[in-house]
Image (tube, rainbow, N blue to C red; front, side):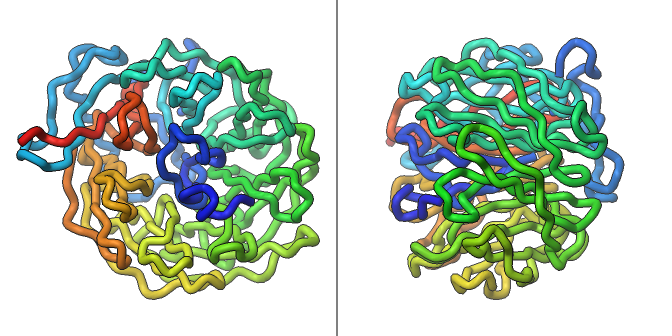
Length: 439
């Protein structure tokens, strides 16, 4: 696993193993994210799972996004705050259409043209939509690839030893190989297209996915969170794009909802970290070089932790956590000790029902900032970091209806890191460009 200093940051998040490309900007450890063709429900339907994976008191708000035309790339009316000279703001540039109920989202350069591309899983359609970037904040029409039923999360990685980005998807319901959920691997061709998905058994109801080299053999492995069994399933890679049968490990928490993998200390051992929604904590499992894991260590983490991001927020060369606290309407920051334990969390208020969080340096001051996707307030909250583990007051920007996942990267070719969210109830993505108001 490449450490964060070599990357500029590591990735976690219903997200993004290959964030080292220059188009990414910043990506912390790696969180796996949380989605379809004509046979799926219409894009406006709220068909989120009802097996306990969603918070029991979620409002299910399906307010329409303020757009000119659903699924179009027309620029919608700007719902962002007024432009204050010199202030940071994010403006909606496009809203490309995808399939029904887009959920987890990942990004990378899939066709080697130096432009950021996107891949999103569509929960109801059982597809991945791949959108190749034009470099101006817009994207070519989505191309769909079938997955297993109910895909909830996606990451990128190099699974077969070639230089092209591949995709791995956590499909949370039964498919051809497994009746209880699967991991689907789509190998990239390097031209923006992908080969048909190969399905692997991955425990019961895999809902989030992350990747790292857990056994030190140079091949990328996969870890998925199984909420209904309180387990992590690990699939060891063979280096040729194939994976072995899963081994399972207890998280010592209840309902692991999100997962990330990477070093928590500069050049330290690799960990798997989960957010356990029913226990309001996170678990960290250290990988041994023989493919086993040490017993999980747990730390408190907000109210219904739903998503994770990781970076060094206070400059001590130890990786910290940012947790989207769905029921707490906050992003909670846990400063890391480097050994899988974390200090007591500090709470940063954000919008309503944050389902995702990502880390990047949005204002170019050298400090890591945070952005949350707020499902029930139809916006994102940006929190600018101070470099000492604390963050400023949130700044809210409209982001379309029911944003459920978030990634960041250089979308339009300038020097500022932009934001993309998936709008679960609209069958679209929303692209927000990072702008500074003129003096």
